[in-house]
Image (cartoon, rainbow, N blue to C red):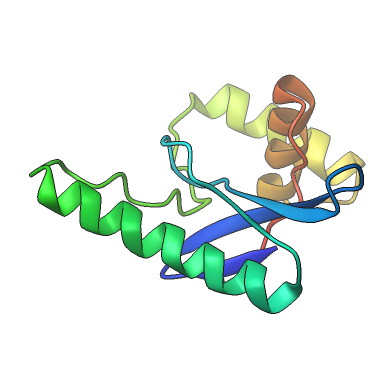
Length: 114
């Protein structure tokens, strides 16, 4: 995982091409980059984010700010009590339990990055 200006990137290695492939994961827009070494990848990531921010500014568009990883929701007290009971049974905080359930629903790993 890489982080730059609040943007986080997931890194994979393409064995066939022999390159690292990165994708910014906490924005709605597709930002990808590649590199043959860690340093090249880091430089490409920073350039991709900077280019994205510049392009968004040039187009007078609102840049999609990176997702923070924080979600505030309101539920009725009965549901809140039930969630807390489930979390307690599993030895987790309410936040960790909810993140696990959301991870199961979306297929995305619930482990907090960074």
